[in-house]
Image 1 (cartoon, helix red, strand yellow):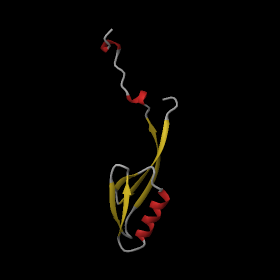
Image 2 (tube, rainbow, N blue to C red; image 1 turned 60 degrees about the vertical axis):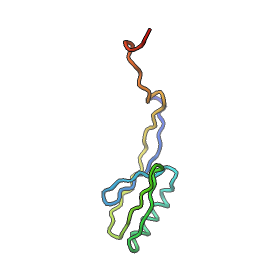
Image 3 (cartoon, one colour; image 1 turned 180 degrees about the horizontal axis):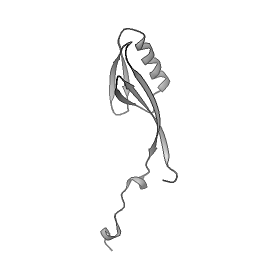
Image 4 (spheres, rainbow, N blue to C red; image 1 turned 90 degrees about the vertical axis):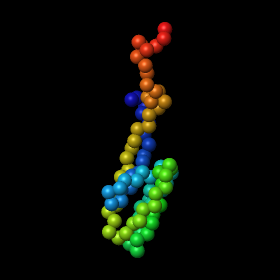
Length: 90
């Protein structure tokens, strides 16, 4: 896996439910929204992964865990399976 590229992804877990955050979304801003919602009456916070949008009702008793992970990005060569020699038509 020479030259493997990585991408940083943030996961927001709220009361045991994991949400993947869009890499373009400002993590500090999302954390501030969650903090503000936890200090007030229950409030919806929008989380998006780029593919879907989820609105989570955050209340003062919510348990929130933020994890930032570095995930490998496979190149096209790594993703394409190579057929064994016996499958090649020579």
